[in-house]
Image 1 (cartoon, helix red, strand yellow):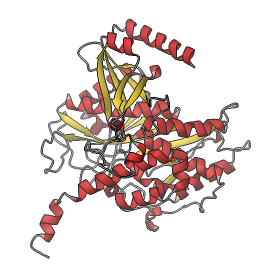
Image 2: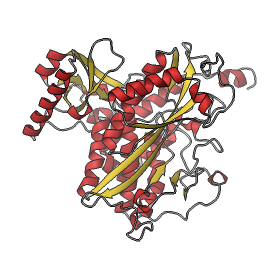
Image 3: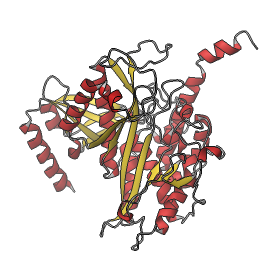
Amino acid sequence: MQDRRQFQFAELDRWLNERRVTEIECLVPDLTGVARGKILPREKFTEDRGMRLPEVVVAMSVTGEYPSEGPYFDVVSQNDADMHLVADPSTVRIVPWAADPTAQVIHDCYDRNGRLVPFAPRAVLRRVCELFDRKGWVPVVAPELEFYLVARNTDPDQPLKAPIGRSGRAETSRQAYSIDAVNEFDPLFEDVYDYCDKMELNVDTLIHEVGAGQMEINFFHAAPLALADEVFLFKRTVREAALRHDMYATFMAKPVAGEPGSAMHVHQSLVGKEDERNLFSNEDGTPSKEFYWYIGGLQKYIPAAMALFAPYVNSYRRLARFTAAPINIQWGVDNRTVGIRSPVSTPQARRVENRVIGADANPYVALAATLACGYLGIEQRIEPTPECKGNAYQSAFELPRSLGEAVSLLRAAPDLAEVLGKEFVTVYTEIKDLEHEEFMRVISPWEREHLLLHV
């Protein structure tokens, strides 16, 4: 293992030398999906072969807070102990917008005993993928990520608005799949594709989604960890490109009242490690038992995993009837009203699409959670409900309606915690409790408008 790592670092040094890199952004994705870390001179990066950060850095709330007591500190060191960060050479990429030759490298987090830090998001996804590997299964995923372009807004009390395009006007109506509406932002997307090309991000199709200023980017299917890295880097890239064009890119699940929310639909399938056969199809091309069991696992465990798929108070505003977002765990073939969809495909391309996940979800955590649900379905041979062939919006609401409810369901799901790691679930739920408490201290405009003088 050590010899292999030395070889990888030798290749990394060669890559940096060829591009005359002078600075390294050493990145670690935290629970929110924010890029934490340090910027090092090239010489320092080569000498240290890693760096240290406090454990709490990857285990903070979206506001940068963490609990002062409780089960959180049964997992995270009370002494503010360091993590030892080790670069993953396979993740190195140029930072295309930097003035000087700069590279970015994603790091893994280890404790002083050389064990992966169990609550670091990348470690959680590695853990789940290893479970599949032991079974001889290889998960394949393909995310579809929605986001909004909005005009600069420096006052959080003011609603967000669509940005001005090339025509000098902002969108005022819905322009789903409109080519001309995308072309309104040609200069921005030329930069986005240029950045993605230089970073070797495997982005596929760009479309205009339903909302005013809402876009979607699709990724080519690949291994989960590599694609989580790409989504993590892509979010960073789009935000940077948007700022350079005097607008914001936001991955909030529901940024604009009256407009559809933004999702991260994840297509997923399994292939055999030896023969690369799609395990969701029998030899005669019919759906396999594993296909149905995987769906059964999603149906059983998605409600308990909602705090991972919809991680913020805002996330639950997206999940509303007739808004292009699911409200239940029904499944169906070529049916976009359900939470679990199977697109029409050839037997070799048969897959399942989880439509519940929000664009605001941490990609590492979300992919780990959806794979964990499917894994448990196959392991427990969970049969799904009958296929929904009608409009699932006519069915009952089956998902938690708030972050508080979702966190309670996650805490009450020991099977899911066993797959994801009990330490991770403890830290994650404690952080989500803290965020919910912070939100409840804020009085909203709705409350002042309707309750101030009427109750």
